[in-house]
Length: 639
Image 1 (cartoon, rainbow, N blue to C red):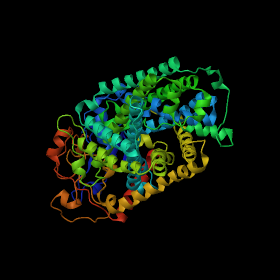
Image 2 (image 1 turned 135 degrees about the vertical axis):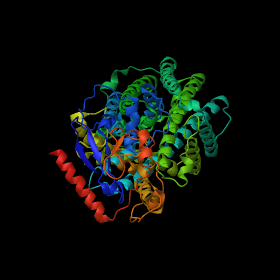
Image 3 (image 1 turned 90 degrees about the horizontal axis):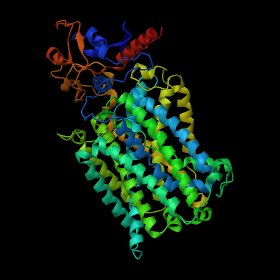
Image 4 (image 1 turned 90 degrees about the vertical axis):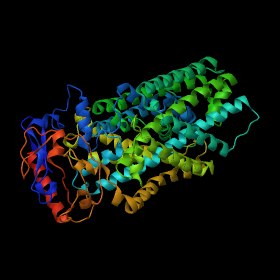
């Protein structure tokens, strides 16, 4: 690909004639009149105006996809989705005993400040990538774009994208299982408060969680499930329920203490000898994943390049403010003795509050958990649909179809719910080793989805996000230092993740938690096997974005390793399969060949002038020569 700077500061993308056509002598390049519509890669990093709707749709086309989903989300709906999914209330509720035993009162304040700062840095770096590549695939799209921009990793771009997609797909399923399981536990606690004589087994919880998944999936099939106003209302309801729980704890608890000691008193009651290490382990239990949900909804968000990263940043900030407030309320309401000796958080609540108040608190937590689950489900369906769009599943054409009126990925929703219910059977087998292994593996898998694109970004050229992206939200000169800091903290989180879930029981818990890290090579092995069995020959992936020009037609991409087909009668015959690119084209201009020259060729007239463009598959020698041209052109641009 040849890059040439234009006089107005834009970047012209031009392919060599051999790349565009086999023997036709046609060269396609942007027309002079159309360059103002193209992404301005080398414009100043500080933007004075937000992108227009036309530019946002064009940005998606530039990434290689046509606009298929309805784009009606704004900042508040995108912010609400990320805020809900971060789970400040439910996550802090389940983690309170762990981090208090590890760090004591000081972990309530300084632990929250520490992990909140760390997570904010991580999501700032990810938000910058989301601004550059606003597509529903999120991390696996970022991975491909970053890997393909580096000559050392260019040939591995599709495989790396496939691997991240596998990590992300498995983690999404586990997240759904966890949320459904926690909701089933709240239902069980409420039932026991009303009917104390009832007893529940593992299979009862499993059936409740499966019923919840079916109900949540049915709700996701309704058009109202993607209403921006609905999710803004859900976020307001979540904040209101969190405030209600705090008020109930403070006003009705049979114990009260001053919050003054949260600033100075460090007390390690666990079997971990190092107080500093125990404090870090307790703080890491508050690490929250899920702000990237906004990135999965990028193709449904207006001005996604600007709104999605802002939503990720402010949702993370508000989440940890909520975490700090909720922890302080728990600290002043629960005695230290009960915090150490009660087996679970529901038992701790019932030890300090009446039966009626406990039922009210559990009801609030039940509603908050369900809203969090469907927020995760909404983003997961967009991710699964993005995978189907890139032919990552068998029968991908079936799963990627959208509903006619509401343009919703209902079939992808059905696929995700079905797989989650099937995998949930493992939770019904055991409540010890299998459960802990599955529950802890999700954190490792999600961390890998963050680490891989950040590593690729750090080893790419400094201008990579501006060369092949369009950043409206940027960290500017702080981008690389913060990316290094994010990588270091992510690696530390992975190390801390192998320590025991219950700090009071180091012996039997530690091996299971440590073995949970085996999920990383296990999923990597799954990715490798599935790549050779299916992905290598079927997965299209974001490789479509290599064709930064378009003809207004469906462009056919060749299979890897195939030779040039001589005199093909059709593009489908030439390459063996059809890859849907995008319908709305960037205005182009035909400058050579038998076709007439047109100074004002638009997207509507391209299809009338150019009926088919064949992209042949080249042997390695031709590919190497093309890469040499790219390297030479990049050196010229840098000069």
